Length: 432
Image (cartoon, rainbow, N blue to C red; front, side, top):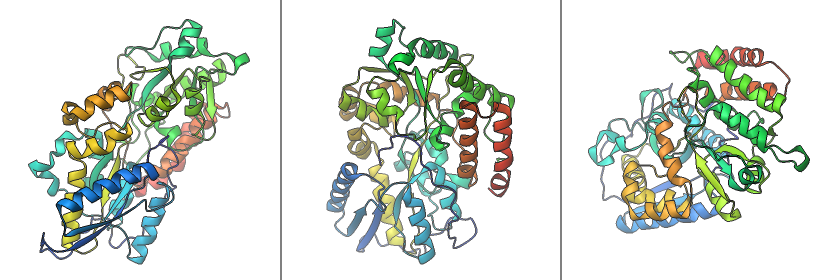
């Protein structure tokens, strides 16, 4: 599903487990590649994207007539997939393949229902190393590969050229500092016209939280302790990062505080916000709105311009049938190949999954059709750390989001807010 935001992650759900923590095996070990097989594929996509995947599934079955693929969105929204998968695990009826947000990875792996693909992706034909490090890491919760990257992205700085020109402010560059960002936001803000320099989600969702991680990382901070059992985001680096955001929102009043996750991107497209930190899912809408925009790397701290990537997955599940497991793997290997992905992600304005796609003719068409996409592709190199995939992340993220929202609305000082979030997250992380 084209993500307008990284938001709306479902609160922690206890997945029905058939074992304790390990990925399931393929059941019967004998594979007959010629046997007739029916696969169930939950795509988590909206209607237009769903049609693309249905067409690709048809193309695959033409090449492999013994394979039938039942393709559906799986749920009314992508967010609902996790709960539906949980119910399916309990009843014993679940798909062979499902789209999944990367933050669900550990919960899915710990259900005992995922296939263990760790050895299979070592096959040179898979070209596993071509996927970005953050995507590979997300697909490998608890040291086991459970699927393939489905979408890779990152947060970049997107700016409205018309507003910058109107205020006589120089466009952002890839060398900008956060002080440059703050100064520009103040100059762009016009209370009388209800124009804001920038925006931030204060819904306390993952959209709130993941925007915070680059500011933490650039200051040398970490999300979790080295053993990933305790919070580390409430370090001095975290406090300084949140104080910066608080000062912009409360003191400068240059930040549009979005309570919903859904308003700031359309307001930017309509020329009411000068800069947003967002990802490639924005490009399609900006193109439709004919917004005159530019894209730059995130502002940096001491020359560090780290960003955050939010890879999503095609997760493969064990239904006790070696033939279904075999063809599930073959389908997603084909879909995520350079040629397959060019027919999937590039047609929608999403970033390419693999570096090798930049050499394809489809990539040249893609960067012309979606201005700024090339900059976002280059920005993948700044995604040097991955969000944790521990099972306690979803709950911890909610608490961090609440802390950010409180501080940016002047309801609590940054240190107090982050310390409270760390305390609330302790149990979930200890069990993760």
